[in-house]
Image 1 (cartoon, rainbow, N blue to C red):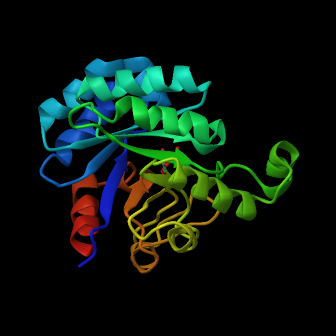
Image 2: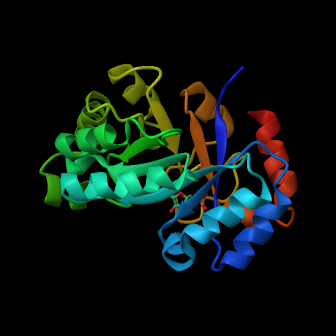
Length: 231
Ligand code: C5P
């Protein structure tokens, strides 16, 4: 049996629309991803609303922290102390010292969240990436994943196409969370390389992140049910 989990992106334009979606899927064992837009607009009270709908929902706060080590650790501590967030993320390119400091700072907080790191943003093409990092994406992404692992962080955000390689270079237990998923081959939208559920399973992906195929469906509950059953 696979232990893959579904993480539903709450990317609708208002809190109200996101909450309507969440109401529809409240009986499923899923994670909810709250990103920049929602969090900047609706803040911590929005997270409380989600937990009110179903306290068993797990929340992934996708704020991709990037700053000097002390500032990142301060922010991480605040997030962990909410007691509402089950996972949040950082940029691996903030460096090993920043990542270690975050992990040290939160280590004794009860029910501390899982922490994962972004290696390379998938919006970069190789030329854009090289302009900043002087290295090819693939090579650098694996190096950053290894840095993340050795800093004691729990996992990475990556594409399903990199999941296996990253696990082979770190550990099978090292978490991979993968967006760009079209569970049953739905329309890719602006995503370039998309993977379905079977491919994700074969590549040992721990979390699939799904947005549009769920919230744009005429019956989001049906599609969530279908995904949860097939993982
Ligand atoms: O609608 P779709 O399923 O493509 O949504 C994917 C979600 O994952 C969006 O919230 C998007 O911002 C996010 N994401 C991504 N690629 C990354 C990191 C996050 O698509 N590398």
